[in-house]
Image (cartoon, rainbow, N blue to C red):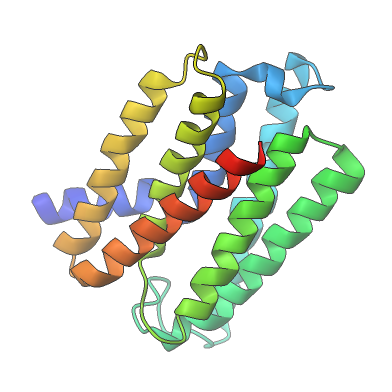
Length: 206
């Protein structure tokens, strides 16, 4: 029962979902960050973001499975993760370009997407040496982003979302350990990398 719950948490809070979740929280609680766009554009922007950072990368991983480039969608072997991570990083870089050149989002959102792209490529490079937990990096990265924004906007209503995502990040990390998907070192490395990079760059660049 506990193992099934851990699997459910790992799926529902998949790393590729985290960007859309983060954007949804930011747009919901501090929509002014969308300027010059108005609130009515939020559903369309979220839909486009979900396609570029979730649907397309997921489909590419499925395609790699179909052609035999990876043995399972779980990518349990470290070396099998390299190609998918590289392609995902490229998709995120394309997303940054599209949103900066074509959609013209607020600079803060462009910065967030750029940091996520950097994180993906760092995970790709680290994967040459160890099977770092992408789940931990993504979930703790979201916490880092929200905390950095909140410290710059102390009167924003982000405190409760931060608490919620702190709990979720803890659950994700615990789930990966419970499933024996990663060692404690791999989970801790992912968590520290995700939080430090996302919080550090956004806090000092805002």
